Image (cartoon, rainbow, N blue to C red; front, side, top):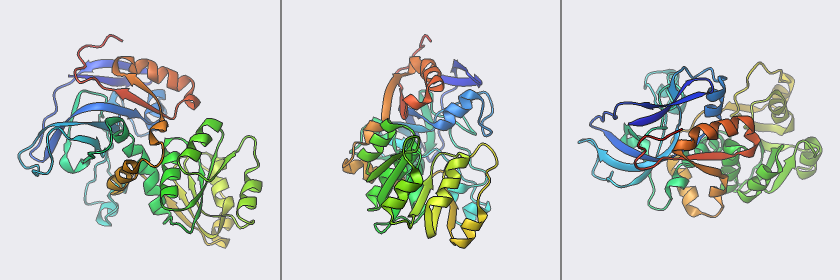
Length: 346
């Protein structure tokens, strides 16, 4: 069957790979949509420390169950639309022993540490295939990126009493905006792109701030009576946003860092101590796929507006080139996987 391999940075090729081999507890999924993530762009540019080459990218995927192993429960039906949880866990590292398997020391995410979903079919353990009788296959492809932001809100213990500042309105940050609003919090979204801030408003942000034209400190002081927000979720990974998170959170507040910083960051540790902050890292997602699916099934917000474009599989090369040259133009790119890929000419 056909797949697209990132042979080396900025070099994609169509390759032939063997059909997946199912285990007795696996399901075989015919892939329909694969979302491209910021980690895919980093790998394409040669900037991801987690990716070795060659690598088949893609970990945000939806598809249809077309076969299953003989030990898969009867409740898992052939023909069901599913999304895929792309993570693994070893079961024996400190994180796994604590039940926080999303932070497994030896996790291997599809498309990152192991080959991913930019192919025709894939076999996964049935527990990693999450179904919905309501959502479309495009909507199901949004579950994984939305789950990362949703998990961050769980890490920050967000509820209806909170005012939440979300720094960065890419797909992950927008997932945090939607989840925070879904939980009843008042959300303030910050970004440098007015189009992404408009989308944040649609997904539940009560206030938006363009940090290139507005004074972030002054706006937040005005919105919080100079107290600061109760929770900050940082979804950018830049020194200035890390520092803003510590500076703008209230005394006894919580800060959740999702963004991977590319280098060392100097922080005012005195603020962390004097404010007695709870500071959390947030990685992947822990047991939230059903909650995200339920949130999306409510369709009380235009979640599909996250999708910037849907690109046919044969045009994947162009999608990466366009994305790399102008990343600000895109929130979420979906690659449409034909039911019979054949031999695309690229």
